[in-house]
Length: 389
Ligand SMILES: *Cc1c(COP(=O)(O)O)cnc(C)c1O
Image 1 (cartoon, rainbow, N blue to C red):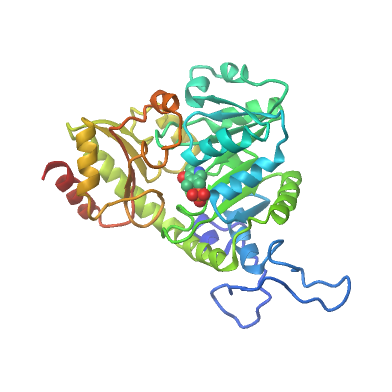
Image 2: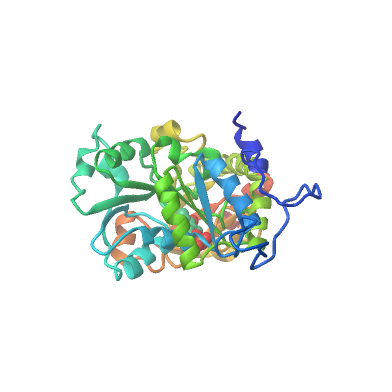
């Protein structure tokens, strides 16, 4: 029997690996670095916490069940997860990525992966795939050294939607790994592995943790072979998530479903409000029927998420909003219960080359909201105050 997603948030697939017999409802924190052996060749299944720890293992099982993967690995941050993932590749390998990605991923690829001999082609995937039923225009980017495609959908911060099924077909035909960073929509709204992706990435710091209090990252896969290679990598490079942080994320995930419901409802209301304001010149949200990604997002996800990016009339107004906000806080990050506003050009995307920013439409008038679970009336009042008072 497979549980529904809200139940999985509490119990995963119902399996528990707790060696604890006390009946504790909350999974224990195994705050230990190492584990004792009875004799040579005998192990409890745990040897050293860099390899595995029961609390981390429980978290990994829950996340694997949410994403319908055969295995999930928990890392000390989203960037640690992506860094470990890139240990699958070798000098000379070529990877196609979308041009609109989390700024930290772009920084990693441009400065570290490139130095390690990996080559990249950055492309606007939604554009390259649109108007071509078979994705032939996109496929032209593939060469004999291409190993993988790496995307986020909706993209950060411009909220472009990429057709995962279409990319999965291209990946299969050309024997490429399709990697989807699913941080924005979370497994509550979108399951890329079910759409044909091979690896899902998460910044667990965001919606999975959900409380802006812990850093974490995940890799989830549908492939036994990749799972084994990633297990070797995590124990070798040592960037696995600590027991206490694993427990915090386990606790956060318990309320993922109700947080996503509430925050996306708030987001719908805020989007409606933004669309009515003359001082707002653009609203980027896949849930707007006029958005070019609306139908694709509807076809591959159960919701449009809780992130909205918008552009205001002038840079001065953008700066004024950032100065005036009180209930909404001006801070980097997203996915927590608190509504945050970000200025991508100086924060999340500060290290992104100027040409990329311009091509993606990230100007000094663009703001990004991560909508939380406050009362929607309070959020609207706050917006009215910072825009007009
Ligand atoms: C935040 C984020 C990351 C990086 O995760 P950290 O936990 O901050 O290291 C990667 N991808 C996306 C989409 C993110 O929002």
